[in-house]
Image (cartoon, rainbow, N blue to C red):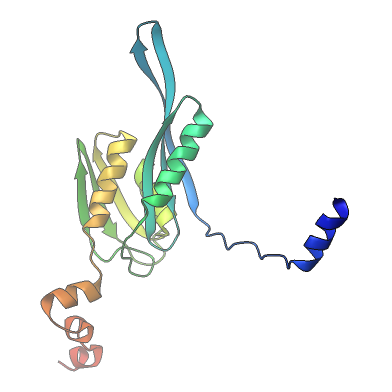
Length: 186
């Protein structure tokens, strides 16, 4: 039996390990939740997770389970499935945007190179996993992590790339941005 297995292993070439995409994963919030039933309370855990690829892609999800570890793993799986890519300009966002969700409001402003990531709480975590390095952000209103993250996603969903705006206007990217040589001459 063992000899047959050894022969099979020698004949079959080893398969290369699958390429694993590296994601940044951050657990934003873990809460204990209770469901009241006939016999008392049934306790469970809720985990809010954000996943990013450091290239402008990001996804969030909420996982619930009886144990913390399984709640986090459920949330990570769902967050990877719900990843969305947002347009970035070098290490920042193209322009200022405001996002709202519930009582939370988030203002995200582009910043010059070297400014750093000036943001707090859940907004900072979301922008870090996206790969944004230079930005100014302010969270106003309720500081509930779920609402702040959703307000951040709302703000980011309002971003459009220069190529997309040019296509909407029916112009080429060079026509939209303009030639720097002609601008300097005027």
